[in-house]
Structures are given as structure tokens and as C-alpha cells.
Image (cartoon, rainbow, N blue to C red; front, side, top):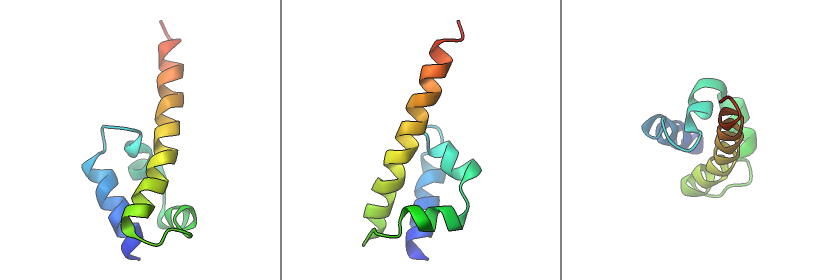
Length: 68
């Protein structure tokens, strides 16, 4: 459970950067647990989730760039 708390705390602290708002707004504990299942540390869990959050953020920016 420490990995989930670490990920949640990091996501809240970095809400406005790198797609972490997705984690705060849409990811539940079960999903975070599944994504971080193979991570051995809290830092590893944050990196694993951060990679996915960055992809989501990149996709959002791509869509936003086509609006205008």
C-alpha cells in the first residue's frame, strides 16, 4: 500500500505537470496497484506511472494542437 500512497502523493504534488492530473482524477487504487505490481520500490512505482502519465499528456497536447 505504500507504493500506492507514494504515487498518489506525487501525483497531487505534480498535478499540473506531465499528465499527473490523469492519475489524480481518473486512476483508482486498484489500477495504480496493477500498473505498479512489478515495481520493487516507491520510486520505481512513481517512474512507471509517470511514463504512462507522460504518454497521456503527450496525446492531450497533440489533440490540443489541432484545435486552432
